[in-house]
Length: 444
Image (tube, rainbow, N blue to C red; front, side, top):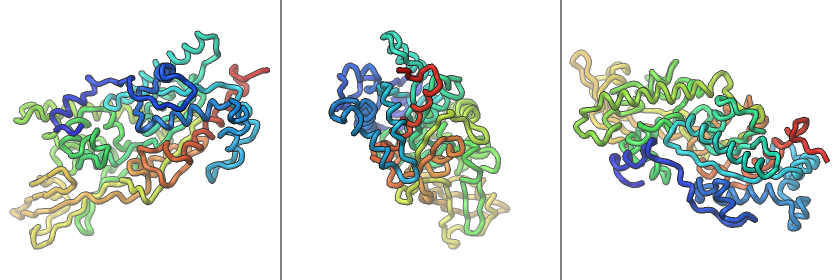
């Protein structure tokens, strides 16, 4: 993961990578390792989801003497103590949930490929899992989906675009970038910070070589529903805010501009002489105009497309500052930069030096006047979870049954705090109530 751009592009190719089902599986449940592997637990990273899967499996299948057959279980505790702002569960709701089994499965997906393709994979997995139980003589027609981050886009596409809503009783989304994340743009310009940089790329060159050729991460770019004007270029009191109407044509596919999303010279590290640079750029713009734009449209609209029984949570924490907007600000002394030029000229200027770390030395000449500008990418300044800003995390609020904010929540560890785990258990119990009046309703 720490290799250079060329090795990374060869290794992290969407067409040549696949999900490894043989990952580590955490102990601590009543199930055998073989059974949990059948359920897909080996497909997801144990370091991120291992303890969470164990917790959820135990919380949903705790009708045993140790909990007085559920009377002292976690679900019952949610009748008394629950996340502030939420109504406690009713005892009747908890009692109904104990009439059903909730075996916990996991579906890993290739984050490099299009989320639309991952939704097709999810569809096949759900059909296989439900058929497995039907073959055993059990009634199993619907699933409850719990998603993390980009997985929420996969779940929504499966339910709402592939037309599989009737197979889903409800969905719980955790820290979903519902309308995208401006951090995706920022990371294309500087690389990804922290441990995530080991996978995504710690520099702009490493990041672009992989993400610039992978539809999945590019689908995390802000969609029109994210809002306009989130990319700002400032020169003192003067500023420009983009996009004004269309992020795809105004930012994502702008070629040669120092502030554009993608540096075309970084797309193909296997071509140091840049003989195929035009072909590489065309491939990139095709990704944006097909895989990204069309995917965004499929999930977009005034309020977005969500399952009717949607529950969601997101981070709203000032300690986890997040890129809601991205700001390039000139920080050059007037003694160095020369005559002041129109901001438009600086926008169309050439990058004299772009180290790919968030600082760009821009040179512009007009009417014989040359000016230099050192534009620096500012720090994150909105509340969120470090990746998804509040504006995107709560975008599902108008369509969800409940959309809850949490503090002290970082993106990668969305399901690690007790508070978000209990919210998810609360939401699953609420979703289970939808069996009433259906063919799944339990009749003694």
